Image (cartoon, rainbow, N blue to C red; front, side, top):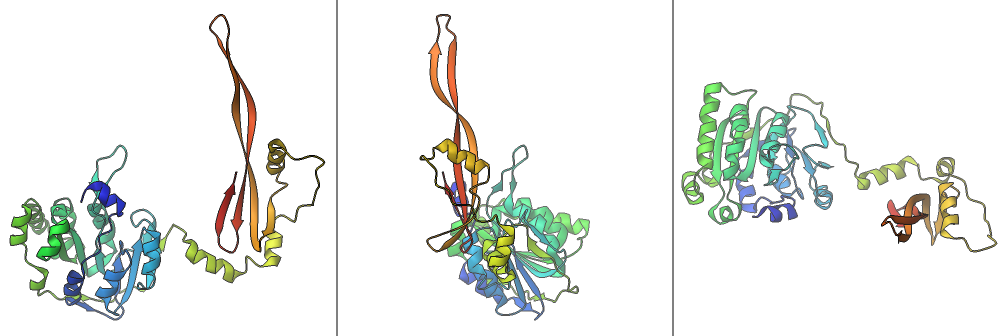
Amino acid sequence: MARLGSQAKAGFYPTPDSVCCQLQQLLDIDTDARLLDPCCGEGKTLFALAAGRGTTYGIELDHQRATEARSRISRQLWGDALVETRISSASFGLLYLNPPYDFAMSPGSKAERLESLFLKRYQETLHKDGWLVFVIPYTVLKPCSATLARHFEMLQVFAFPKDEFQVFKQCVVLGRKRPMVHKDEAVKAEHSLAWLADREADEFLKIAPQLSACSTVMTIPAPKSSCLTFRSTRIDPLEVIPLVRKSGLLDDLLANDLLPGQCNSIRPLAPLKNGHLALMLAGGYMNGEIEMDGRRLVIKGVVRKTEKVQSVNENSDGKTTVTTRDQYLPTVKAIDMARAEMLTIQ
């Protein structure tokens, strides 16, 4: 897929059901095991792999998909899995990683594959003897080869079934976590992975075995430590609003203590112009809580000063004189306390 097409889908490529079914048959999951998917989408893949065993943890950048995943994942975070999450090291027995297929473009730095960045970031969340299931285009094996070879043993690469392989040329990499693999073994594994990545698609499909031929049983044990940090720095309003309501912050008594009191009613002698409204907004006179059509709104006035060109004159010497006038643009921002929506009136 072209890069623009990839970005339009936010790099979201759900794993085919046929591959999920084959992977699920290879897993022996302890009741207390933890399973992590940092790019879980709607949570269908991790839900299918777990099959009711262990505790599932998911992260998703797209809010709609993250909301959908909450019905399937035990603990779900909304946010950027690379920069907005804090997760304990060596805390998970299974890392299912199907990251976005794209480049990370950072100003002033060399472009790097997102698949490699996700692998480097999340391999450390696996505890010893935990298993990695890594779904990527086979050509990306090369930039990921060093990390795979240094931190995993029993590395195996399987091609997607032929029909599914033709779409994104994907493969599945299985590996068991080790604190550090011996240098000679790591170099050998790295060269082998890079060699596979350099093959033509048809040749790779002939060389790499199918997942159905895998006989490895991936035993996912329970973690030795019960402590776990798993949180996102991004605030999800769908989670916060129920907590705020439960805390009583929106009760009339507390709202009256926190919010400005009701403004006095006035009847101006003449219609107010924008300048008058701007002064009232700037002075905070119009801030506070109001009720409109049965809705409770908290309003806040903001004024932005600009200059409006009145005239442009050129004299006999060729000099230009620009005459401007100050212009105040009042804006009212209203927060709907019930719906947690912000309205802007300008």
